[in-house]
Image (cartoon, rainbow, N blue to C red; front, side, top):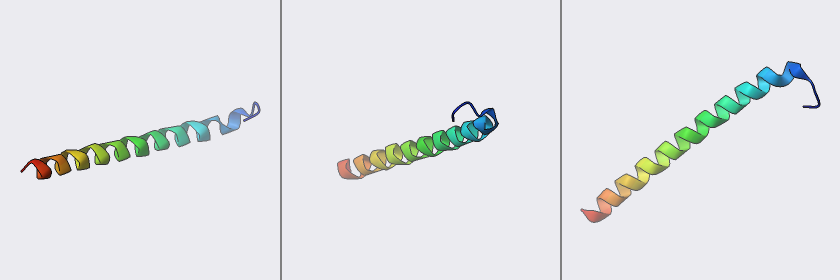
Length: 42
């Protein structure tokens, strides 16, 4: 960023949206694995 504070708000919003996508991906993956595990044990 080389000291440009005007881009700070963009960086923070990018960080938040990236974090949200990562959480969604983890949630879908864990839920899918639990369902697959439940199906395989039935």
